[in-house]
Image (cartoon, rainbow, N blue to C red; front, side, top):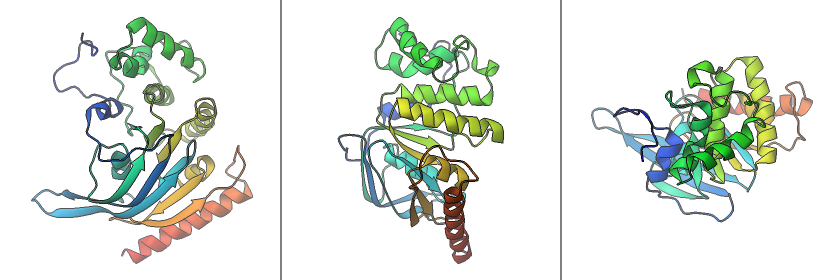
Length: 275
């Protein structure tokens, strides 16, 4: 059975689906918790030189929490998500995590499938019939603001809609931990604000433990229960900011502004120390 339709050799397969076949170096927790301690990772650069990407990152997330990672470009945030998902093996440290799935920056919707079939793909790969997979995915289309677009091709969807379909596909993987790599980075400010509200509502209905990578400190404060500030490469944990603010949160809230300024001070100090 060819689940990929008219897929050509070399076509991209979504990262969250590739992860199913990858060996994991992680130990597993029982209910959705994450415990990363002094995680390190190095890679071979062009020419064979060994370069350190992460030099001691720690984070924790209780079941149902959203933890955000912020830090300068190249500090290893995306690498850390791949380590949590078991797509890479660490050079040192430890990572205990429930089964996790990665949603990368690009939505990677398959252009030859409808929005509904893109969303239902993890269920099909798990052995569900086309009818049952479509029915399960269709149940969530209205809740995610996608009703009426089930048969649309990816090229017919807006950026925000494509991200919702990609998130639904990630959600339907059934994994208790979601690793989201800048899911709103390419969206305009108005759409991003709408997506923030939508994500919060979706996680309230379908609770998962989430690790979110973002370059936007305000976004991290608005969405997260905890923010981890990382240093310039090689990435290290600089600060842990607990966001003990009631939801929903707004940009102008005094608590949001104060925590944003604290995170920016940490980032500025780290940038200065790294020069």
